[in-house]
Image (cartoon, rainbow over all chains, first blue to last red; front, top):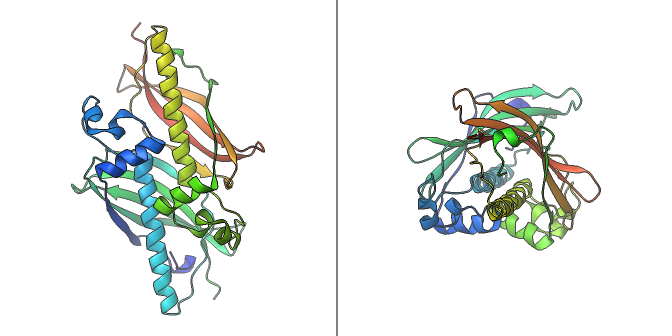
Length: 159
Length: 159
């Protein structure tokens, strides 16, 4: 996001990026952060209700973050190149309704998107507004596997 | 958690574990999942509003998961050794109010706890209940740095 609060519209969609989860990276993440059988090996996963190797929910979230940071850096670079002003982004008051709706299996390709669902002017910080977003990860079959609602402070236009 | 729904009490506290965030692991996580300057090097962080190297919020969450899995495995092993029955844990309907309240700086030691805040009998799944929890990460100064509300399906006692 490089836009000021006033320039962001409800309904705006950001294509954050696409990621295919390889078995190797699923296992590597799980060994460090979520060592449960269905994240650690195909053989062990077959003995569980998942039936197949699948990614930790926090891995799915971590990849969302990776793609969002890279996308924002790309948008900022492009804005700088054309001499456009870049709005400051403030802290997030937190996330809501973080859900892992379906497993992300090894080999699945997840597309992440954010849709602006609302805007609130900040009373306590008149130079800032809060942008509300609906975030989704969707697999190659069009099924939503991951979703949450985000809130972030965005600078208001100095104009 | 190895206890059945009926045996879990509101107010029960689980000490999930303690973790000290080294600069090396903060940088390693950030390179993979959150490549922003304040997570990538002490020097770059000094140029930002954080002032010092600090962990990605998703890294703080990932370590919560690591410690929770290890703690649950330890509790299950102990229950098995004494021949106690182990309740099944079902899927989570999702998390609420995920907040990163203060930065986790390099060298900080975070203690993670979960407190049972409520219980709901499932109408649609009579063999299961939902246990609601308040989860906190607290630094060495007693400040809450990370929190969220969890919900998880827990098997009801077959007795």
